[in-house]
Image (cartoon, rainbow, N blue to C red; front, side, top):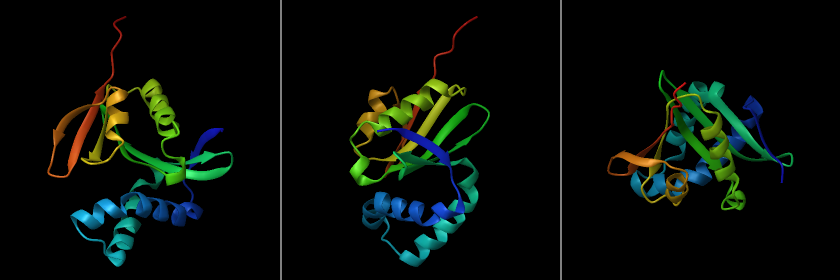
Length: 149
């Protein structure tokens, strides 16, 4: 299976909405309750803010996921990484994260994850550590090794 990423385009709107809904519906419903109208409004705002820092994940020509991120002076933050259910637990997320870790030039990579998300074990296996928590999330980070020259 050949995995690649490409830039988000407006034609991806429906795919990304459905993917995020599929990925987050159970968490959001359990914690806050799901209101479709509010979620669409939130999503529209979200897309406008992040579309420049979003990639669509493609396997053998089929859209299977998305990732978006933000950066500041010292940190690369993975804001969302979502894969369609039939592509989870196949090493794709691991492969994507390894590429990010190996190519990232920022000293810290961080992310936030629901406390009961099974991906926590993947993040820990790749070196992320819990740096903080709220009632529903862990804030995780990976400090990149710096090489002295």
